[in-house]
Image 1: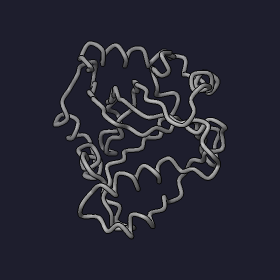
Image 2 (image 1 turned 45 degrees about the horizontal axis):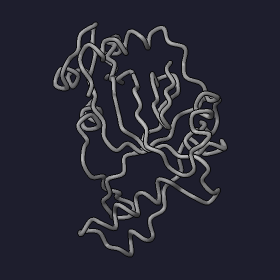
Image 3 (image 1 turned 60 degrees about the vertical axis):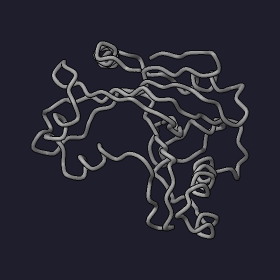
Image 4 (image 1 turned 135 degrees about the vertical axis):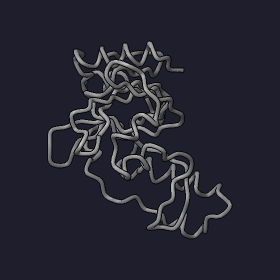
Length: 201
């Protein structure tokens, strides 16, 4: 559970923190075979509408996640998770579920640790994770604010994204699932707990 005091502390920490490194994540996940459950704390800048670009709003998220390592080259963790969860949803056409394939992305699984991904054209590394449960708070001008306060600074599509919860509809394949994948820049990660270990920015 995230408290307002913790959210403010994480935002302050983020301003001066040294980012978690690829080497630290490698060491943390070195003994993972397949999937491990973990906890993450991240601080991200909220993208505002152009008229409000001077506003600095931060989203602090504490999440229970799945991280991956030592997967076979042909394994697609996201695709497999979508097929598993979509198969349990009564309204889905099971033929379409079986045919599901993930689309291309701006990142690639080129690192030996599956949950460490890299931008295809830039030297930017991210943490790839499936999010099981998350709690978030917003910080604006040194104060914790609610979602309605944040919405006034966003574009209509930003508001929709902010309020997106529950199942995901994949229009291309015509199926629903509840897999929420996030790819987080390492510089936005404040803490990762996994395998009875912890790394902190």
